[in-house]
Amino acid sequence: MTRTLRNALLGAAFGLALAAGPAGAATIKVGVVAPFSGPFGVAGKTFREAIEVYQAQHGKTVGNDTVEFVYKDLDQANPAQSKALSQELIVKEKVSFLAGYFFTPDALAVAPLIDEANIPCVIFNAATSAITEKSPRYVRTSFTLWQNTVPLAEYMAKQGIKKAVSAVSDYGPGLDGEAAFKTTFEKHGGTVVDSIRMPLKSTDFAPFMQRIKDSGAEAVYAFLPAGPTTLAFAKAFNDTGLKAAGIKFFGPGDLTQEPDLPALGDAALGVTTTFNYSRAHDSAMNKAFVAKHKEMFGSTDTVTFSSVGAYDGVHVIYQMIKNGGGGKIDGAKAVESVKGMSWESPRGPLTIDPDSRHVTQTIYLRTVEKVDGKLENVEKEAFPKQPDYGYKVAK
Image 1: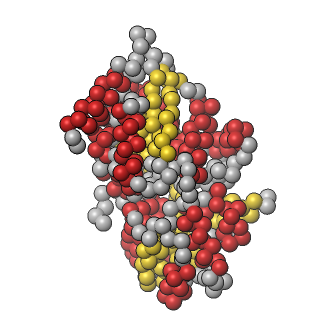
Image 2 (image 1 turned 180 degrees about the vertical axis):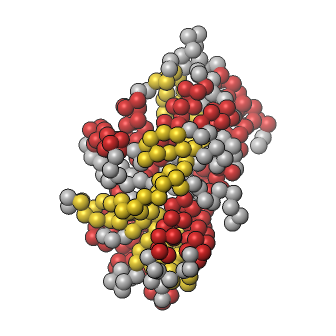
Image 3 (image 1 turned 90 degrees about the vertical axis):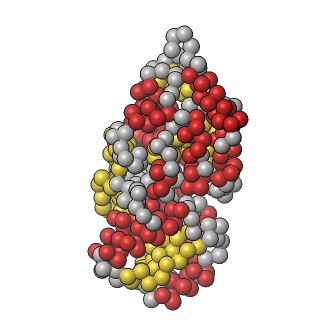
């Protein structure tokens, strides 16, 4: 990092320390970097709506301090742009926190910035286990592929499935999912007969479907980032006859995120996933969250996993501000103050693991069914207190 940039970042951090007025009141800014436009624009929309729901329920102040969110649009995975936008938020907007980050490469790109400026970064989504190893100032409130995949692979083996194919997007989370599935499935007696890696921007999945068909597998484990790619993959699975041939379809819940279910239609019926959240989760807190979302935005169609990633991320940020006792935020101390923190979320109980700084949580087995004429991820089984199995695991 250049001396000029270092001085700018440290100067920004110093400016934050002076933000508090005589009575201790301050406006504490949180910079959110996410896709708010383009093919993954629904992700940013879910972040922003969940933030607004949280503030509607809990207020916009912590003590005497007002919490303000500043949004920057990163329409697709672009680490250089992620770093530039984050730097702008630190230097020009003088944010006390960074948050958001839908894709892993974008989250990884800011590690040197948050260390230089001593700013916490709360990850609302990016799911590669290694992210939190790159800086002690990362905290993650979403999930990891290891965390979702280990209980799913165990479940598949217990169902008597002996041969499976893994098909993943060829980037950090996909490789984590592939490793987690193969390690766990084979440990429990299964065989991965083919490991398919697909370019992140794939649109034509027919060749991959043919490989799955030719493999002789009874089931496929698939991971692609939620959005247009998962939608196209799931449709191809159905349209190319794999579903009709009796091949079972499993994967993390990105495959059947709620905003995509209407477009997937009946092709999604019966798809079994494991994930940390379903809009249909039966708890009083989730019902209140979903009801408030509908009240504010007229619909619950966009309530999904990234919603709770953001909602709980804001909860952690509020707690860091409270623990800091005023406008000055020391990033390292703020993160230290929430290690081991436990709370109840719309998805269930959460605890921030002191080592990984990632949430230990319940992972749910879900199957897509029609509920009152609407497609939903209906929870069938719960696997409580699941850690990030991939943290500091040699790849």
